[in-house]
Image 1 (cartoon, rainbow, N blue to C red):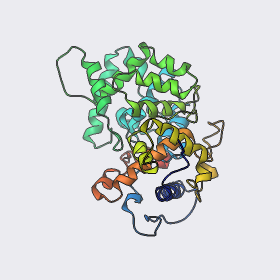
Image 2: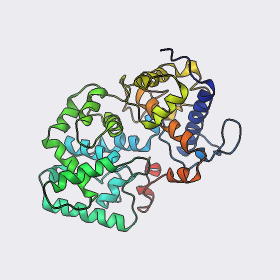
Image 3: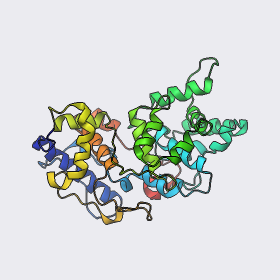
Length: 345
């Protein structure tokens, strides 16, 4: 298995993709001045690299959801159960500002769902949650992210809530009630006890409705918490569909069972193979108030999987206007500036 033998043209596109999304992030975060241009490496217009076409950045500090978890949820004055569960719904729902939407709070630092009460079947808390969500939906607040498919999460949550009751449609509050059950089932304690992201991944894989994608990204999201013992740069990745697509183009003859190894190869050799050429990992994004032991000054294992996934998506949508439009950023702005996480950060 010679991973150094990759498609050089695809690697050039890969490097350009990383260069452009990094440039865009640096401009959006105010790290650098300049105008962002949606163009490919040949200087031609590229709708897939449009300013509002969303891709998660491989640098974890440039992912506003991860920043929110690390800066706000992790430091909130609430129980460890509430910290973990509020972190989980960040990804299980997906929309930016979802905590504010489903609690009807205008304060991004105080908009938490009380999973302790939900886990105790507190009727008042459950009814309040349903009312808040119904109101949020009626007001057009985003609940579900547009960059992930949530069907398996929604189905498992609905099945848990209705149990043996009469069939009904899924209600968005079901996800919170389902997550609230994780404490009694021992899942929360297990996540706090393991010391490697691969073990957190296995815990998530054992939960109904959570496949590879939400297991790996759920593990990465919770790794940002200062209360957990594993990190996003533990040597382990679980390639998603987009990452597999990118690997297939980079290594056409490589067997899929080695795609995880290939992504680790990219993380460990990005400078040598040209993946990170001219990419400015800006010092202002190196850390979040000292949250990480190591500065985020280059590719990490989780981030490299994210990068491969986003590159794979880009390759599939860059010539499709409808697909590009479907990747437009979904963020809550109805609360004013405090409801927009980019402004909050």
